[in-house]
Image (cartoon, rainbow, N blue to C red):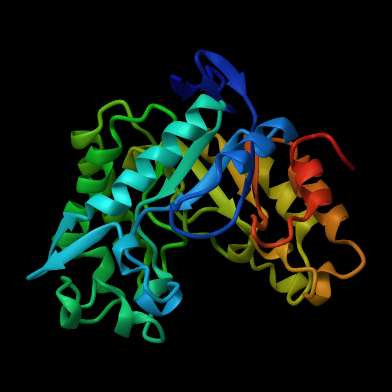
Length: 317
């Protein structure tokens, strides 16, 4: 599989063919997943999975799964954790056989927040490089080296999109995040020259990126998350229509493919999602100007939202 960007800079190309990305993913680290589930996604029309390959707080992990951490840290320096990477490689290879692209988050800001940082392997008390979590996450050279190490290990896979960080921006200003993106992308490119690189840009209150020219930091793709779009005029309400309208505006601003993530639309218990859960997903999935959509869904052994899966795969309404 060979990934690229279409000549009009609107879509990802797969082996030279412009392709709309249709994702259905549970938010978690790469893990062992039955290939029967990947078969099911393929039959449903899904061609994208989003996964994390980065340190996350141990408090988020299932007890007894420490060996599933991507990195081991000693004196602040990261080393690959072989059991994790064997599983990750097997998953990514199985996905490629089914024509599925894997969007990998190489860093995550939420695990570095004060509430979560105490059990994050990046914490210096646990051998990691960070003493304060945020905003140190964005300036520590050891984090850039960790990202480079992960990108280097993933270079053997051609069906991977590398995203620098999930929802950066907390406890930092735009200059810090921009500098972080620039350094991280340079490190990724040095380790994996052929990589397709995405950023999740910081947005303003109007839902437009605060990095007006993401190409200057080296990104080839941007992802926009529902939870990151906060329109004061619609505070507390689901913003599916507004999010969909933003896709075209963001493309015009950046001239880069835009992949929307439904994120907050995954919980039917949320007030905004009662009665109209599938309708909201349909709006985002059909957004004009979007290069694709990833839905935050559930996977076996949890019950699967079959209607949402059908919508994302283009086989339901």
